[in-house]
Image (cartoon, rainbow over all chains, first blue to last red; front, side, top):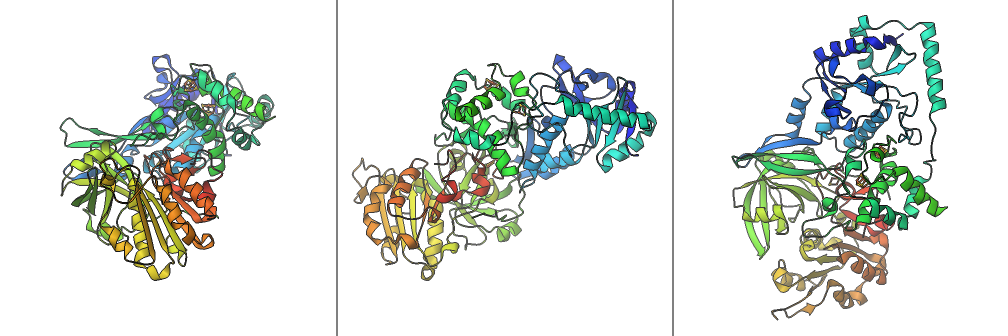
Length: 352
Length: 287
Ligand code: SF4
Ligand code: SF4
Ligand code: FES
């Protein structure tokens, strides 16, 4: 059997082995904010986050699409001096290992992975993704009141991870590999793991059954896209627009928001520089503003609405994927108390 | 009609190729025509494009903007970009000199369906700087006149000093297959002897000559122009599938990643910039 058992108390040991040949990224509580960051030993890992105390504020996307990234370098006299592909190869020199990704975050990365490979492959994204091993930590119940992953079908990704850890008792987890890389990893670190007994296997099945019972869908997503479209002119958008501060927090904490802008940073020698790409937000007025002054989303309500259109209409249609994974981060971190579920329910209410 | 997006080259997605400015020609006070050549000479041979496609032009140290290619695709070895000073990047490139380097990504987008409409009458409606990409499209048709019916060109500018390639007017007027009409919105200095008014005021001149069943229209101009031009074309009974609009949007990546150019489930950079009216009629926020 490829699956193995690991004792919860041995997880730190595993992390300490993994850091030897990987850049390990795990949930930490640096500066008291739950987040994903590089760890050099198990002591830096906040294991309580793994066991669903809270989702890290910034989702896993930051590994593959960092908030700020160099795209290429140039000099004014020679033009491009280091291409995106060369930079990407350098960034991804060492293997990265993500430890403890939640299922919804894995689904979120899968969404981005699809988008960043569609038609044109984004070298930076894809090289980092290809070099990354993901160990997931399964959820058996909604992690908090803002989570609606069941509604968005995101808590049981079929791919996009190499091993999934599922707690089967207070002390034990089962490590189920989901790729060759995952199997290899379990082999390499075989001493930390134990074989799965019949009893363990039954406990695993029971845990999965419990998962199925615990998760509840809050509303049907079927028909959502066309209902939103039908209510394009609804006054509900206007109502929420009045509350929204257009701070963009909801977009930055969202695992499936990936918009970026580019800018040039010239060095102080004024001779060389780099093109940077930064996370951007469709909630900012400049987002659709072109040189010459025309703004294609001039009104706040158009910008407020666009995020919903993009997530619940455009992404599903273009990529056949849900554009939201229901992690609830945008609800948790919205200073104006706007709940994406309320917006959707009210928009649909109008059409009923 | 499902459209497959043709990928025109393998020049890479994120990094521009270095190109040298080999010539600069002033078209108006605020518009220059830049002739460019890649520093890697092999690229010049491989760089092929269609009228209406665009590149992302990098002015190193300032940034990147989408610019339609102004030259005719038949010209091999170099290409032209007509650039009006409107923002940071376009202002900076106006200060560059012959021999300076810029970055080019692309060509991107689909371009105007000129070849695809052989045998048809073509109606081009251009506003302002939108004349440049359309010009590269209609010059392709003019070069192969025998393959097309009549070629109508309606061209509007804000004022007489903005008029591009004014000297070509006579060339068009001499050819009977070409029906060329021009206008300016205002003529404060009283130096214009042609039509005054927005581009839609030119439609009465051609309306009796249009055969709606056999006419394909292509439009490029400032965002506010489209709605009004489409109304005129609908009055002429030209079918939505025969009306092509080159849409402008903010662009950062050019390859369907950054989302700045999104209109519904379409990206202007990938699926456009040229759309048929039929394609975008159901798209919210398109026009
Ligand atoms: S829209 Fe909100 S709930 Fe949905 S994935 Fe983004 S942050 Fe999570
Ligand atoms: S976090 Fe809340 S207030 Fe800020 S932009 Fe998003 S919805 Fe508006
Ligand atoms: S310009 Fe980035 S998606 Fe079109």
